[in-house]
Amino acid sequence: MLDPAGASVGEAPEIPRDDLRRLFRHMLKMRVLDQRMLSLQRQGRIGFYGTATGQEASVTGGACAWRDTDWVFPALREMGVALWRGTTIQEIVCQLIGNSGDVLIGRQMPCHFSDRRVRTVAWSSVIGTQLPHAMGAAWASKLLGDGAICIGYLGDGATSAGDFHAAANFAGVFKLPLVFFCQNNQWAISVPLSRQTASASIAIKASAYGFPGVRVDGNDILAVIAAARAAAERARRDPLARFRTWLGAAGMLDAADEERWTRELNDEISAAITAAEALPPPPIESMFTDVYKDMPRALEEQMRYAVAMGEGQKFEGTFPL
Image (cartoon, rainbow, N blue to C red):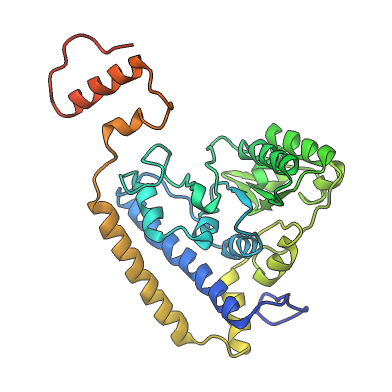
């Protein structure tokens, strides 16, 4: 839809003017948040952070195509999907810190965000494990007939994992309501795409499993939006510059808008950081609650022991097993 300079080269999908501006602001939010959170990580104030810089159009374009009733199974660089669906910046910062403001109560690693309220499911650092989960949820959705689809996000490296092939094969055989959304940024950490596959593209792999594969320029947000309404893959080049040029040419954005939004976003992020860093860690007993409906006696004893030790109290006897 857009050439690298931001000029129109195809018929754009029908998107209201206000939504187009919202799309750009959300990509800007992701870019600014990445810059600030990476700075926090380098300062040692959070433990880990995976940026999505250069992939904002793919994340945002896909996110706006899903319904609120759809389920998202993200990988490393899709926190922007949760942000689009209603998660706040402060909730993201709290998750990165792992404090009592974290919706996961500090139980998941930084940047491994999930939240039932926005139908975003926790992922594992093990590559590709979220794909069988997405496939299973899609199978459940088909059996229930609830009309929801599931979106399994992955990177190019995940297509080398067995979980991808198992999930894709099952999804194809049972015709599941599932979109595999692959962001191909050309590298799986340190392994280039040329060492991941001998196929002409990643999208072509879908044919072997009996469902369509669409290859789209992941840094052209209008193309991603159009393709994501069926299926979408691939990311390259800088999306903000291209969409900025296109919006500017259409009279929907000027430099003052971006400067104001950048200031507003930095202020919002600063406030979120201040509020998040002021919150205490999750209570010790949170490691034990929410696990069983009725807590077993042994676990109750372990919780009392852990709380007592955490408060500096003496606890008679050895740790109860």
